[in-house]
Each structure stands twice: as structure tokens, then as C-alpha cells.
Image (cartoon, rainbow, N blue to C red; front, side, top):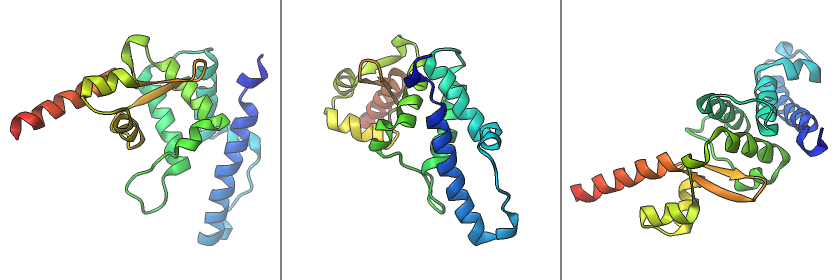
Length: 175
């Protein structure tokens, strides 16, 4: 297997990151509740299972319903980026340049059919806005997007563009 697409080292690294953070929090909340876990146990847990599924999807070994893929991705991103007491989470753009970010991108890209995606330029044109506005809407999750790691291109989810366009037209007609 292509070593770059194995992802096990990446998965293990991120499981350890999440576990060390959880361990730190639990040691401050209730140290007696902490049970040391092995990497094998972490792999068997829900996060480990989600990451393993996303790796298999990224490699193209399996296909799942898009909704299930997006649900698994959102679950992982929430664990990584949703701070305590916050109302929502934000994924830093730099995350998508990490090994895990690239793996998740590949899994997400494979969940969509090509007809379900549009280029950033096309999305900007359809919505009558600039490309930086599209990027801002991608960052704040107004528009869903996927990155094709093979070509390096980013695409916007067509249904999100159409929904936002309808919403903007409705708001414009109410003004």
C-alpha cells in the first residue's frame, strides 16, 4: 500500500493528542476517574473507529452515504476544535494542510459526486460576490466545500450555493 495513504501513523498521532488533552482535563476534574489507555484501546473507541472509516474512505476502499461521511467528519472536527463553553467551533485553515486534514479532505471529496460541486469562481459568479467572500463563507461554514487533494483544487457544494442564492433573492425581494 502507498505509505502516504496508510494514515495509521496520522490516526495514532491524533488519538494521542486528543487523549493527552482529555487526560489533562480529567486530572484537574477528578484524577481517580483516569484509566490509562493503550493506543489499541483508543483505536477501538468511537473516535478511533471514525478515523479508521475516514481513512478507508480517503483511500477509496469503501463508499458510504454522504450524510454518514459528513457526520463522521463533523464529529472528529468537534472533538478537535470545539472549546469548552463556546457556542460553536472553527477549524483553522492551517489544519487542512496537516496529514489528518488532508485525509479528511480526501474522504469528504470522495463522498460527493462531481455534479454536486462547483468551482469557487463559479460559486462567486452565481452569488454575485467576490472570491474572498466565498472563502469567508467557507470558513464560517455558510458554504460547505471540499478539497481535491490530488489536484489541489477546492470546490463548493452546489446545493449550498443554490440555497444561499435563493435566500439572498428572498431577502432582496423583501427589502
